[in-house]
Length: 520
Ligand SMILES: Cc1cc2nc3c(=O)[nH]c(=O)nc-3n(C[C@H](O)[C@H](O)[C@H](O)COP(=O)(O)OP(=O)(O)OC[C@H]3O[C@@H](n4cnc5c(N)ncnc54)[C@H](O)[C@@H]3O)c2cc1C
Image (cartoon, rainbow, N blue to C red; front, side, top):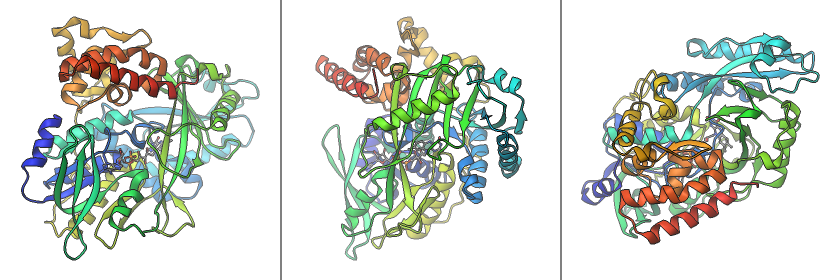
């Protein structure tokens, strides 16, 4: 992926694109992959970096959603369980099975959750990840040696999937590009174009790097902007009613030692009635999440003090060593784009299902849903786009489409396993220049060759792109990420031909941001 070449595709294009997708998160990128692999000419425009919105801030689970089962939303659970299976099949380098234990401290929990999780297994059918079962106290502690033992009776084990969200997103971008899509970051849609009848037939977009304005024609314009959905819809009609309600969730990241073993903890009912997870991720422990409705969406939402306290207190109930505020290595916040069930104007219920909506102007909006179901959402959206744009009928092929980096066995790739088949090329960079094979920080595994690769092949444009979304340094350890900023800036400046002033600016911007992810 090369940004200059992508921009050139925009400037050289004289015919309208079949589809222009606004938004480079899971939803938009899924649409770009689906449309490109069906053979359509598709352009995706992302205002910031790919995944800068919600799609880099999830709990990192590819799951059916035990919570939705409790709510009786069986169809959503079945769909998500099927998608979970397809994603593991198509991206085995990025999706792995993870065992979860629901610890039992009351007599009724083992039969109650035991039966519920059997149903979860059944709904997965042939896409199952492993059989759930009730564990004794000893078996539970064998798998979760750092679990709070007082009053522990046993647990129920079940299986779901885990992934690295922004890494999958970058590999989806590469998949779309491999199939001929143009995907561009740092290019913001500033207005929509309409024909004589008021029907949308393109966008105006501003290149955030050069300042250039591009007028882009399209048969269908797809709005996949997550929490910013209504902003784009208001470009078409300032009077429309909102269809998305933002709700934020936070995660606290700790050292791995808080959760020893390879098993996650799932708490189905916290004191406020929510689900909470403590999961091992990239050799750290991630605990989350909360759910707090907020007024306005933003790119860098801040955690509320009561959310931090709530997670620390709940974690202390389940972990033998209660984590303290000073143990938090990073805190990250994401905002769910909850679609109002029934579409705009209907405030009765907020849904985790996805919604597809066509405004009177012909703007096609897709929102809601979850990371796990991005592929199915994309299929649904492109089917609608074909009808709306009177495009030729082409069948969806993504059920079996291998995602960029596909590799079945990753055990020999060491710390580079998330790159799948790209890992060899990154090793190649390090072997040409051994200095680039050394870790950039003693507390994290990342090496200089990954920075070169990110700038050269993955359209990383800023130090933040590398430390937050190409690697996950910022999400794992904000202080370590801050310490790495200068080295990363130096490698990027060399690769992208930037000067000393650029480096200084980048380092200062990143360190200000990293400070917000730290509680120390
Ligand atoms: C706390 C939390 C935990 C979650 N955990 C999970 C989980 O474990 N598993 C799971 O399956 N799902 C999970 N989800 C849900 C999942 O993360 C979201 O459903 C998904 O990431 C939404 O993706 P999106 O593409 O719709 O939105 P986003 O990722 O926000 O993407 C929208 C993009 O549109 C861009 N944009 C906005 N305006 C413009 C413009 N004018 N021009 C160009 N681009 C623009 C933005 O910059 C942004 O990058 C979680 C969500 C939250 C909040």
